[in-house]
Picture 1 (tube, rainbow, N blue to C red):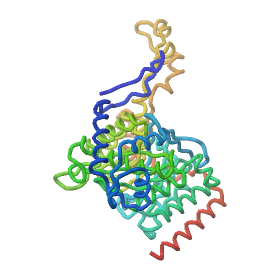
Picture 2 (picture 1 turned 60 degrees about the vertical axis):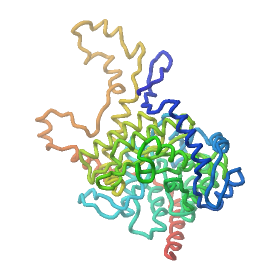
Picture 3 (picture 1 turned 90 degrees about the vertical axis):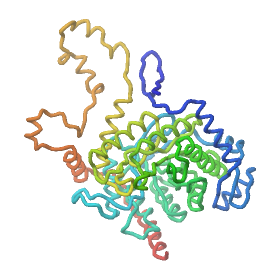
Picture 4 (picture 1 turned 135 degrees about the horizontal axis):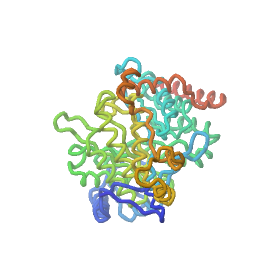
Length: 490
């Protein structure tokens, strides 16, 4: 159902949201999750994590850990209800709490659709530079991810190369990932250089670490937990996202899948808080459809945004910020399908209030990235943000005196009230076409994709992000060089 909050007598409605679950349903899911954790348990593959849980009061049988309800509740109390991300320059930008929603790219796709040739090819480091620079220029892309799983360097240091490129191409907050703790250490060192020290990065983080994922159902792998623990130890916010598939690694029912995903999140969250209380943690239950015809996962199906909205209901109830998904498509190119799927996801993300929303730029179910998909999604986000921003109702916006003065048959086009308010009241597209037909023909009959490509190329040609100081570039170059020497040994 659609709900909204009344804000004083102005009746501004910035909190319009789509609520999937009632409070009673949320409590039922949470209580069912407690039973899974106490009776079924989870496999925890990291020795330190097992020891932390054992000392805290869990029942441990080898790697099988059963977590009591009271311990989860204590961990929830220690989890901040807000995570704040800053710009590279230390200015606080993203306030991850409540229904505040911010959008950014995805990561780890092995292919890219080339802006010049239109061909699908392996992703290379220059694509990261372009993704970050383009995202830095677009007003509705709020944070940056690499949109890459690099193929032109050693796999063990691809993540360090990606951070090296992003730090030089954007001042916006960055969500980074790592292949392992060694690479994560390099990434944190790079960001500490730019921030002016680890202490400054901790107090105003522009980096949030995507530590990895549980292996559904209910397995917590050693590598992901190692990165989760290392991030917490370094006092930085962390993402540990559950990714499930209906009918494959979780029940085919959304309700059952929410329970499995929430159980995974509760364990990850508890480990983070046992390692370092008050660690910033973004929770996530992403649920993909296993297409029963093709056996492929479907990013574009309705189950994903529906489950993400329901998960947001649960985490809003628990007062924990969330990591979400939008702007991804199963289409192999930027076309009508990618527009439909991206729009629905972005609309649902804003209505449900997912906080940090990634995957802007994904094609082919996250196997490919495309700069044009980012530019199109920027326009969609702007459009939908206007739709969910609400309507300000007061004496000025109603304008009774103006209505009375102009009376029946009056025209408002030249009135000062229109001049005063039209810029803030009306949405202005940068890509959507509103020309008359003859004007459209005279200007070259440009399609939406033509305009997207034209805008993308213009930004890449003309836009230059704020540069890093030369001393910082030299420092992160040195960190990258050492990481590459280490990578050659593997």
